[in-house]
Image (cartoon, rainbow, N blue to C red; front, side):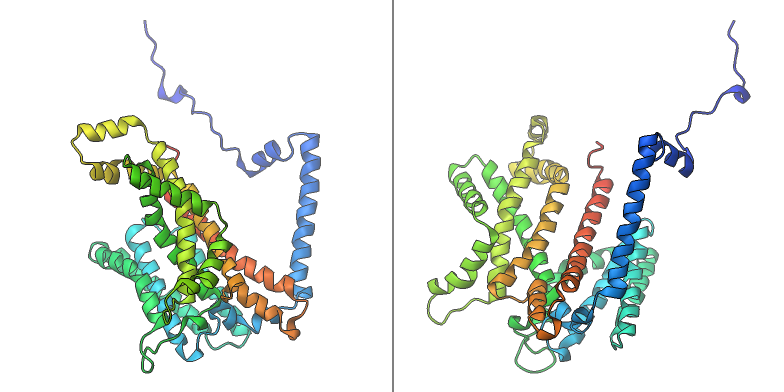
Length: 402
């Protein structure tokens, strides 16, 4: 005879939710040794926070930063043409808002952070007496408008948003550089570009163009055609065998000797090409690692479906390979962004080059710690942004879960 258990008598499943106090007792004060280590580490952390805060507020002299904000941001870019840079920032804010409203299901904490950062910077500029602080608030306004428009009309605005995202970088170059000697969009030579503006342009173009180039090199190295494979292997091994600074010096100092008389190539273009060539070689090896991780059964399944070689690679193999190496690729992108600081050694005034020039000013002698702390903060913000985006992409694609 079977006895049925009443639903009232069924015990609930055990829970792992032990609360904050329970977690602290288990992980921080589980034993005498853990308790001692917790107090020692906590005291050291409090001392470190107090020391850093005291240095930032009371000891550090930030004149080397506050007096030269425009140089850090845009180098010697003409002040009369600042409207171009603000226009691009406004458009970027609108695009981020549209993309967030259309493609993301809900507003996450990072969205609030992105909105708060311009507010903090605007308050800082206001205390410094700068007239540009309302522009930062307007970026937030456009982002919020874009977000609600994306939420309200996701299907109608999806395609225009895709097109604007694809056209944004070409538009950046057109607007920043301009054309013609006079008029509304007069030409601004690249020797006036500098600071964060130049660093971001070098990094973005290095990332955007090295990615497809690296994928092609990886496919070439995996190819069964001897000539294509040999060329790919030679390129990858030669480029990986020399440091980036060598390629930059060759592009800036040696290339002009091999060009015909009267022909010159812009210095920024030469640096960008060197960065792309260098990054593509490492990108190829990372992608090749992803290709080798794909089981042979995937190739056989694609062949059984009757797919052609390029269809098999584009629709079956490459998506899985790239998905598997997302953390490695983003790590390389972060390294590439920081490696752009090397162009300061060949005479280009990127963010680090501007900092070195400011420190050469007698008025700011001995302010290295403040300047480089500010530069480090900028690099960290952008690097962490890429890292966070990578983690979100991994979660969305289920990397490491299936």
